[in-house]
Image (tube, rainbow, N blue to C red; front, side, top):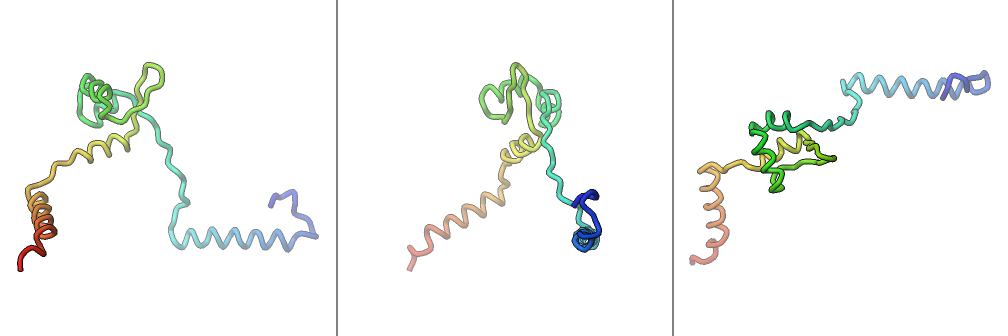
Length: 117
């Protein structure tokens, strides 16, 4: 409701609108919640991408050429998103011996559980 719409006739309606707005603000303050504002994804250039993943420019270009590294191209320039590069790094995690042993043990139990009697 705009301030221009407020008149003596619709004063009760304006007050009801203000009461609901104040109640909504009060509930946000009580919950200590910040209104959710979607984050903008800002692309980074090749220099920032090299620093982020710890690789030299030729290596990054080779990974892009082999389509192993997520990137975007506009004209002759490459662009990257930080969250995609961090996800790419996390996908390359090597399993520990303990993780491998537990997977083998679980697989063994799954396949050979009913064969012994």
